[in-house]
Image 1 (cartoon, rainbow, N blue to C red):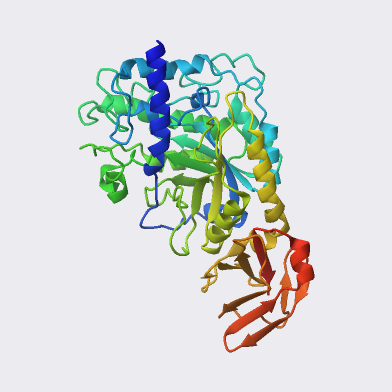
Image 2: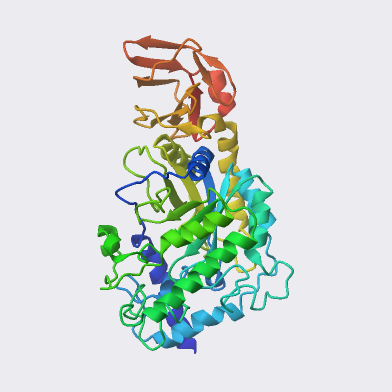
Length: 472
């Protein structure tokens, strides 16, 4: 047993180290929704700009990568002496140890609000199939294990309530593949990669059972958990065969000769019957059920004029891992500014511990981020892109009604420069003010270049800020 645990430890480290190479990027095409209620909610979502994604499940018990260690693909390395069957048995068995008696969704929601976040995406089920809600379709859930007797055993309900009480939009992350389901990974066959492991053409009845199971779980989420704004569907390889694209081919898994079609038209129709205007985000499967795109751990090279969101971790992992190294406040603020100027939103990832708490360092970092975001929110929330959206380390946004334009200078060092210059986006008669203090600033225009003076008194007042926002 000791050697088995040592090989697991080695696996956790190696998988976590390279997992970031296995990322969703973004679709090459976008199709605007036509449903008026969906269009209205999409515009509301585009105003939010900053959200939190929470990965939490049995993988928090050992503090390892979410789900992926179960999968056998070239990018996942294991100790050559490890036994895959024993590992799967150990992983599934983590559900018997997962008892988050300190579960505190109010702590999470308060940390998100302090950061200036406006919406939530919570993992109701990851690829390992462990449901973080009280599903009636499976016994493999948080509400059926040692946490079952806790008053908050139906975890998703209390997470959604806590964030809803902070005025945030609510998103339910849901994995289309389910590796614990015998109708996705049939025990009769081996599990070589992320795909279902049997020929659907030969066993259509089994795939139909999986589709029914999937539809029923999504129906539970749409029926029993109050208002839901976003259905965020992961596992983009579960798709009709005709929609397989280059990104799917680059995921390191073989492409089956059969279609893993779960009938998204029915999923969306039934979900929206319960949640009118619901945004459906079928990641990387372009078309009517990908209402916004979701590049992962990256920012697009240029601005995009359709809705999108970069999902990026606060640390190095999506879920909880011990000794996490978090990104600096400056790095996160700079990332947010660049994303917003390019027309997107930042979905920042955190992972609670197995006990149900966010780590204090993560809470402190979120508060530091919020210190800047809340003071400079006019330049972030409810904005849209400008044609001339960036110039070096200077980024531009505008109010969506056109009433104001903003220039946000990223501060790379500790000191604010004495002047800031840019071209093309010229100020109007109202002049230029610093957003945080409202102070009017002197500037001059020569040709198409603006140069703004930042007096020493203002620079001292703002201190070591990660970015400086001006309105004109």
